[in-house]
Structure formats: structure tokens, C-alpha cells
Length: 287
Length: 317
Image (cartoon, each protein chain N blue to C red):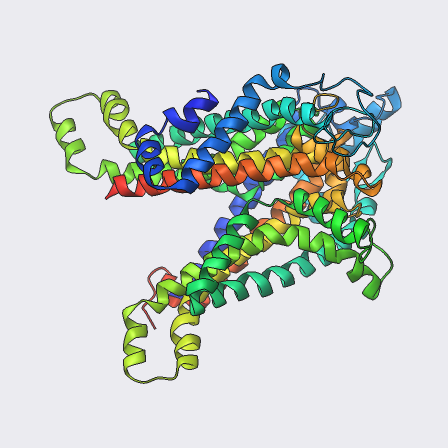
């Protein structure tokens, strides 16, 4: 699934219905669309080479040539923010997709079989929930080294409990409905019921969870990069840029930290607004 | 057995089982890397002496379960093993840093409870413009992660205004508090917003309930309605979320510690992970998980004590 699909295609009805009446939601979609565009086209639309040194002054302030200023080795911040959007946006998408597949799989297994199977799933979910996401990610980095791969896999596992608990409740509610019992009596196979009827019925709940989860994944991954354990230099990433610019703040050049920080906040806000609207849509569907 | 005792025992059992399984997961991290000796040596150079040392310290020639059991029992007794990267006992690294993290978390909890619950109560009781303002502020707060607030605070209050120190933990007493204010605020903002929303919605749900309406009709004073009928009924939910939040702070404090150059267990965890020092990472993870699970269980039990109906098999008081 691409960014554009998450922004619009995955939830077409809600996007259209709400966009007609709500400027805030429409604005959030536009903002997220622009950021997704930067994530896709970053290296091509950046005015400078994001890792080229001394294209401008050291710790340069905002200017016409460098709207976001330049960092401690004279790299153009705007270019780095645009190129960094790639890792900052795509890594959370991978987390959301992986955790949704894993969590949904566990939840469906539990809801379908019930009994001791659901007991085991509940225990697994409890144990994952007992380890804070940041700790799982740091443990993974200690085991497999720095970079984005270990934290992305670790966070996908860390988010399983939330996805599994939510979808298990939804699946159990759906399974209690008479139409599924009727299908079973008619002799429709379990797999067909599961993937043709149960999973489609749960799309609103899952979509809402994915939108909300994206915001959290983005914050967690940016935090891990801020701690120096995620995306490694010289590749840019908003989290590591914020950390790298701390010395610049003390040298009187706050741009190098503040601009990537603003982008993190704007993206998370936009995704939060979209997520809230999708959740509302899921609740309306449920009624 | 009275229902309350049964609940307490059942939750205690569940907590211990979860902790045990989590410790197995954390221990098996060494095995998952494929080469336990390299993993335990971390960034340190694996000389033949070091390999021998690791072999002996971790009983690598013993069967798996026996190794795990020795690791866990010594950890529980306070023997946290040895860091081959720092070339010292893990306990020596941990003890002084834990105090600082504890101080930071306590200050943060104070800020979160005062501003989070406070703004939630005000928003729920005043309504109107106040409620809307709090809603906008909490929406913004929920999008302000610790590291962003940290650099904004460093920029504005430490660098530009010079009101607070930028880095370090300072001496003891008030100097320490002075150094911890900005880190604590940076850690608190997101959770203030979250707790404020939880508090508001828990209170609003009670304010519009029938029993509160009845109490109002009977002419019971507003302050008493709020204390006995509204706040007490909303308290278990607020307490449960506060407990989970506070439990998570010990791990989240790593970000504030790194941003402000504080030597707590969080920054130790991050440094150890960066240097692939698995023995330290494992012990700190185990410690953080234990704190997280125990605090969650305590919050859970407190809610059960306040609200007897949540006790399985219990009757409404």
C-alpha cells in the first residue's frame, strides 16, 4: 500500500463524505498528501544534494538560498528535511502494516477457535504488552545493530497487543451475529467465512486502528532516531536531525533542530485528525 | 475465600506469570543473535581470555534452562552480572543512575497529575469556551513528543532566556530540582494532554448520569455531588490510566535523559544498546519491565479497591 492510498484511497467514503463538510479534515488530508509527496519525491525536489557538505555557511540562518538554514557542516536543511521525509514516513507505514497483519492474525485465530487457543493468545499479548515499546526496540538494536530495520520489526511486535485486543473484540462481536451462524449452517467453509465475510466486516475498525497507529509509530521511530539508534548518518531522518541540531541551538542556530521538529509535529497532527475521522466513521458503521 | 482476596491473589499470580515469561523473552535475546559469546561481549574485543571469562560467567557449557535459571536467580538477588564493555559490575553502573531516574520520574508525575487531572476537571466542570480551549491545547499536546518539547525548551528557556541550565543533573537539593524542571516538563507534556482528556471524559460521563441528576434534584450541595457522586465514580478510570502512564514514564525518561545529558538508567540503556552491550541492556530492560508490570498491577488493584463492582464475583457496595 502506498502513502497516497492511505491518505485517500483506503478510506474513500469517509474521505469524500467528511471532506465535503469539514475544513479541518480536508486540511489534514492536504498536509499529509504534501508530506507523502515529499516522501516519494524527496531526492528529486530537494534544491541541493542532502549530504553535500558546505553548500552554504556553517550554522547558517534562514535565507533565500537556504529557506531552512544550513547545519553545522553547511548542509542545506530544507533538502535534508525533504529527503528525510522518506525514512520518516515509510518506516512507520511498514510498522503499521506488519503489526496489523500479525495482530489481526492472532486476533482472528483467538476469536475463531476460542477456548485454550484464545487463552494462549491472551497470554502472548499480555507478555508483549508488559514490555514497553521503546524497550523492545532498544533490545532489538542491542541484538541486531543500529539502523531502521531492528526498530521497525521491534515496534511491529510491540504494537501487536493494541491491534489484537481491538480486533479480537470486533471479531467476537461479528461472530456473534446471526448471518455468520447462517453461513456456517449452509456449509460454507471456515476459510471462506473468515476471509469473505469476517475480515471485510472488520475493515472500518482496522482502518481506524491503522491511522491512529501510524501517528504513534512515527513518534516512536523518530524518538529512536533521536536517541541515535535508528537511521544512521549521513542519511537524513527527522529524528536524528533534531538530535544532531542540538549543538546548533546552543550556537544560536536553532533552525537545524526546529524545522525537522515542526515537520514531525505537523505530520502527527495531520495524521491524528485523519485518524479521529476514520475512527468516527468506523463507529458509525458499527451502528 | 472472600472475593477481594481471590481477586488480589489471581492478579498477583497473573502478574508473576507475565513477569516470568517476559524475563524468558529478554533472556532469549542472547540466543536469537546466534552467537551468544559475541552478543555478550558486545563492542568489547573477544580475546581468548574474554571468551573464557564470558563462558564461565554465563555458564555457557550448562544446558539452556539451567543457564536461564542462574541468570534470573542472581538478578533477583541483586547480582546483575558484569559488563564486558564497561569492564565493571552492572550493579555499579546501575545504582547511582537509578536514583536520578527516580527523581526525574517523581517530578514528572507531580507535573502530570497537577496539570493533567487539573485541566481535565476544569474542562469537565466549566464546559463552554474553557472546555474548547483545553480541547485544542490537548490536541496540540498529543502531537508534541518529548524530544520536540525538549529542544524547544532548550532553545527558549535555556539558550535564549537563560532561566534554566541546559545540560547535566547539578548538585543535590534544590539545584537538582532546578536541573530537572525542563526534562520533567518535556516528558510531561504529552501525558498531561492524554490524562486531561481521560479525566474530562470520565467526569463528563458521570455528570450526565442519572444518579447525579437525582442527587441534584434532591438538593445535595454541588461540592458534595462532585466529591461523592462524580469524582469517586470517575476515579477508578482516572487512576488506572494514571498508573499505566506513570509505569511507562520509567522507560520514556530515556529520551529526556539523553536530550538533557542526564545520567539515568534510560541514558545508560541507550548507550549500552549503541555499544551492543547486551548484558547491561538485558538487566535494564528486566528492571524497566518489572517496574512497568508492578506499577500497572498496583494501579489495577487500587481501582479494584475504590470500585468494588469491578472485583469478580463481588457485589456492588
